[in-house]
Length: 398
Image (cartoon, rainbow, N blue to C red; front, side, top):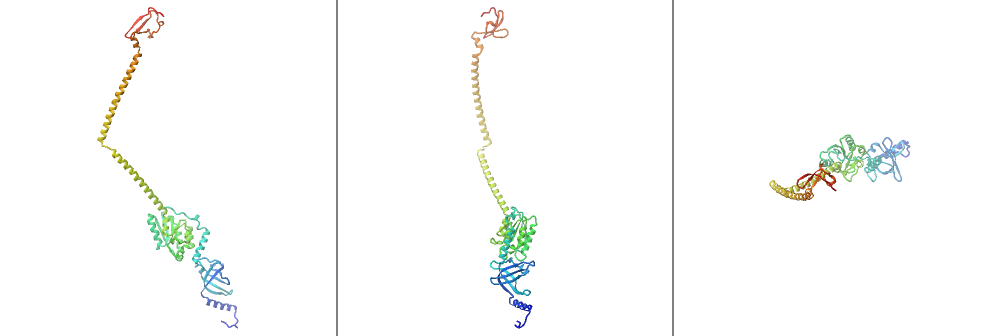
């Protein structure tokens, strides 16, 4: 350090202060509240760290800012790690922040909540923009790790419950720095294929860090832009990611996702099985009824000879009845004829003639009933009960 009587320039003094500060504060951690946050086009972050009685200028350069999992904002309580320097032009002490994490909730959890709120405000979670999962898919696309447990669970369910279904697997990394971009590209590429009916996007369980690729904005945007319906299947039932909120349908596990993808096919097959069972029951019932009818007919069935004998007896019985009926009818008719003949005989003119009467007719055939009808000398025909005679009128009287 210079002698107290030595006169220093401002530049020299600031330089000495800078060396002292930088040598003594090479790596420090500071808990403070962010205020006056500025985001210039350069990508650096400029802000003030403060507590109740002091404040310190700070900067987070772009390379370090890009590594943050959350979005810093004024009013946020954070722990900053980095080194302290002095800015010569202003003589200001400044902390160069190399890492930052929120106090309380972890940085990942905070980043999750921030992105969730922003995308929700944009309407990406709205039910109105979600696609309906097809009931009878023919081809299912799967975006997941080729070596994880998820792909085996998905394939096992699809093979067991939906035989003949075509499955297209697009293997990706599901954790790590490059995972999010790979997942987004896979979704975009499969969405361009017209033969894909539904997509399953996911992975098996893990920590928040392990599942983080499915919380990245690039993945959320790819899911939201997809025209192909997407089922998310990330982690276990208790795990929720941003992808789950954006997806058209969220499945608790990869196994559940596969079941949901072919749910319509399974319901159709179950309905067909029910119809087949009902049809089989109806056919069996009908057959039982026909068997009973056949059995009854067999009991009533007799041999041809026996049947002929029955018919012969019936024929003879009918002939006898017909003969008796004919004789009865003939007797009835004969009796009726005799009665009519007797009545006719009583009314016959011949019967009157037999009692001594006669019928007198003129030459023209007219019956003479009065003497005024004839004249003297007229020839008449007299009919007796037996025979007839011609007479001539000699005299007429009243």
